Length: 316
Ligand code: CP
Image 1 (spheres, rainbow, N blue to C red):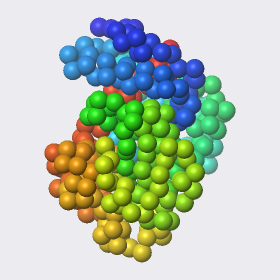
Image 2 (image 1 turned 90 degrees about the vertical axis):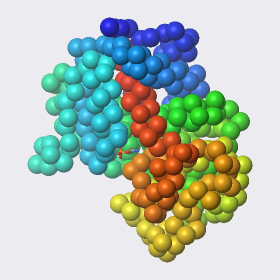
Image 3 (image 1 turned 180 degrees about the vertical axis):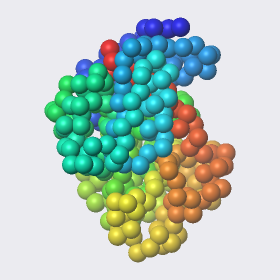
Image 4 (image 1 turned 180 degrees about the horizontal axis):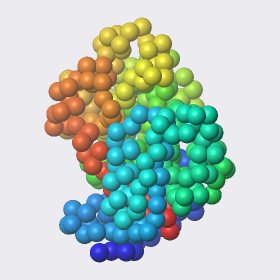
């Protein structure tokens, strides 16, 4: 059993300055690299069957006010793998449903001895409000259209594994950029690691993004894909009124949907990522999602390792 952080990689010992994880833009390049190195190391240790009880005796709350499969389950698995006790609090089933405020709900969790809360919320900025309302550490598991930091970290680990590094790489992100917290966190993180980002999709979903340093914006899918080192497809977020930005899903799929033929514009071996959940037949074909270039399953597996690293780094 290992009860302290593995530190064979020097970067793995880079401490985080913050008690909270709101978004990746709060992290330095060294802190990001240290987190990815630690995640890779934790992944190896787990693969070897070694236990990592660095959170033994700690309690973690999972407060989710929006649907989730990957993020919720992988945080629960990550906390358990580190020896923490996990308390699930689906917000719709909590006393919020009786009118209690989120702030009072968080203070109630804190009084029971929970030290860290993983929060998913439909309102952008909810994690910042949460951190001001209680003394617990807050980990943002997705807030509205604002940020999804652990998704960006697991995407970066997956791309780093596939490409050998991100410095100087060109990453194409295709689809519903405007409603995507995944896109925003990925833009911060990829450019911080030296990659350039190409955004492609319908004009209504690209507004404002041309002002980001290191980012190019185009409605021309072919131009975004040509010579890209990796391609990320995004889900059309109908729950956030994304349908109003395109004439129809069929038209979106016809002009910006990804398949193997379009991926060939990037190159025969260029990897395909998608944060999930996917709408097969809309933003990508089922054959592409299940094919040899798809890293979608690998992203889910890396989500566990990255969330273990994040929880361990924040607990120090
Ligand atoms: N990518 C992602 O956040 O998936 P879930 O909504 O299933 O957690």
